[in-house]
Amino acid sequence: MSLLVGGVLAFKVLSAMGVREGEHLSPKELLIMLVLGLVPFWTIATAAEHLRKDVGTGKITFATYWTTIGGICVAALALVGVTSIDDLVGLAE
Image 1 (cartoon, rainbow, N blue to C red):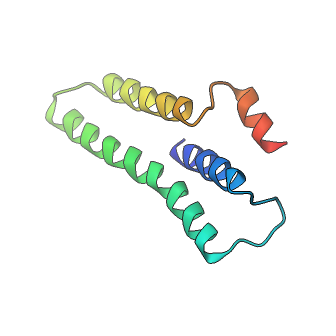
Image 2 (cartoon, rainbow, N blue to C red):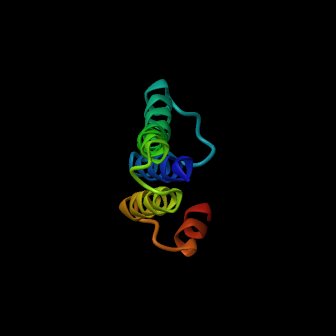
């Protein structure tokens, strides 16, 4: 899910920069794409790691873990402008 967030974010930023489909990317654009693609993954993975530790110590339940991770992913998708599957289909066109 986090890679989807990063991919959408990278796609929207590169599109706003004027990069067209089929064009070769400059090193700067490749770096932007890589960073925007991986930062959401790293952020959500770090949150998941901390929550897993809380499950291990008994502070939260496994159900709370998944509810929290789901909420983080939904909020991250909404933040990049994806609120339905139609938004993803629109990006693919």
